[in-house]
Length: 242
Image (cartoon, rainbow, N blue to C red):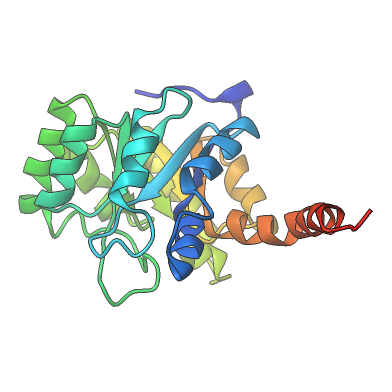
């Protein structure tokens, strides 16, 4: 079932993982992913996505717990389909979770989950999450076989992997468009994300079946560029000897 969106437009979920990446490069507490999440919601984001990886390379357990316990934001817990992560989700009870593939050697998520090939292991975990009242999304390539597998597994949402489209591969937007139409036919809510930027988000956002876009890396990187003059000017003012 759809939860609707603002003014008929797709909802925007902001992924704060790479705020944590910057913090972890030096250790300590700055910049604070929780503060960034609050700022994103204050600026108009409809929710916050956070990926707690097995190796904790960016978001940490404490970050996720703070966001999950906040009444000011809606958490989409991005997670591998492992017993550890399912246990954390069942303890924190976020409104939504998105199951993604995860490999220790990857820099970022490299493709969609193999829902069709991993049905035996995914099925019980999806049922456990749904029984706890958690809305389950699967991160999938725009492949009809995978989309139909999501329906058979009991997922309520599919987030289409837009990485190949973002890389400019021929025919990928048409694949996304057809996948979005198929999801609507199957009665599954359609989300999309990965590699989306100012330059390429428009066509995806215009697909009428897409109800949510989850964007992270570009937004955090662009925030550094757009926000740097303001923080330099503030620091310059603070160190003036007047």
